[in-house]
Length: 371
Length: 236
Image 1 (cartoon, rainbow over the protein chains, first blue to last red):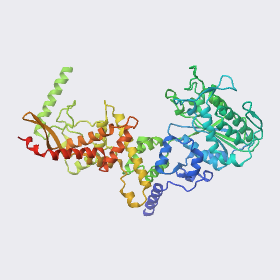
Image 2 (image 1 turned 90 degrees about the horizontal axis):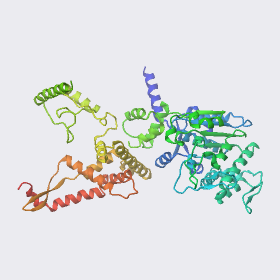
Image 3 (image 1 turned 60 degrees about the vertical axis):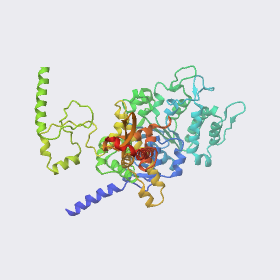
Image 4 (image 1 turned 180 degrees about the vertical axis):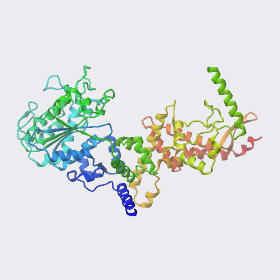
């Protein structure tokens, strides 16, 4: 009797205390570490997410906690296992993350990007599609595309994305011999030779913002060719992918015409990338309620969010649900918050918070804030 | 029917009222106007600790037969219920928008916490770290305590001249003034600064015994000290 009590006690104690793991590389994480937090190195984090990729509220937390930690959760581990057992000669497999608001889709994606980074993938990451299509700041740069009739360019957003792409793939672009297969002529005087390194293309897009959208288009077709030739393996991650399939964007042309997502050049390029007509890559997408307006947020399932068009477009895909915290994850998160001084007070608070937040990670974080 | 029931109610109330006088205390209101409940209705005891205390002192039996108001929605037995915080929220509230007021105060607490945790991590030694108060609620308590005035000036007219006469202040009024001053100092801000940020700064300042509000309190005390010659007008 006594020994059993001790066992129960020590188990409770160990559950209450271990919330961190020293396993920092996502390749070696396994089921034993579910619910534990691992720390991203500062410089890796800066390289991967300095231009977006982590949600804003999470960035605030990292500043307060003076470290960037991610929880190892089941969906990410499932994805890693899937990727490890993938045959890369077959057409790319598309994974779609879905789940309620604030359950950690974007952070699961961040975890996977870290995995891809450690594994030496070429990362094509779009932090948030709605940033292009739905967010309209006072001076949104828009112009009619010169190469493709009837389409709209978003040169500033495109250039910003190219910078993001460049910073995420610094090492690959510097070292490896990724070459362009054909010649691109931008204007009478400007052209990119075939056989030039990929980084030259990216640099050109950043320097000549006017051509940024065309550069992205070229870059994407080049990446497809390179992956098909087995010169690099590619990891595509697009957050808020369903906003490509919402009937309208919030953009207006100077003539006050509403723009549809298909009429934006960036949409065309990235939809081209998410077709499964190439191999040696992985595509991870997310369907997010927050990417569409309030009146169309009734359900979080991919069929509803992607709409018929998007669902048929992606059709053979692997849905992966990111759910609320399990009991163990909640406990470890609460003790992590206690360790970071974010949560304090009597232990009854946790049961109450568990009840009021319904184990939703974001709500839990929010409700801990004023305590 | 309707008339009947009202009549019955009145009778019942009268009956209770008569009984009540025989029992003890009347007036339980914490507010100026009566609600739909008569005055002799007791305030509910909704905190678990208070209930435990009652049971311990075996006073529960006394209350068993007394009519009790139902608790309001904000009077909960939640772990993080706090009377002072609730008071401050009510002071912040405008036009009955309590949810907004609550979110503002909670945002302010969050800001306080972020500022203090950052300071905590910046501090070099353990001693310095121990000095930093991290709990936003206790910061609020300290701030309100530090802003409470001990004296007040009341205008009294003697011989055609109005004198500012110093006098003692009740506990309730000093609490009121303290919260009011804190909020006035907060609202006196740049348009671009948000309320929660400014409120967090004011609270931190006041908890530190510095800042606008503490100065205002000291000014009042100084004024009272200067006007002490008029003190006798209070009763003459």
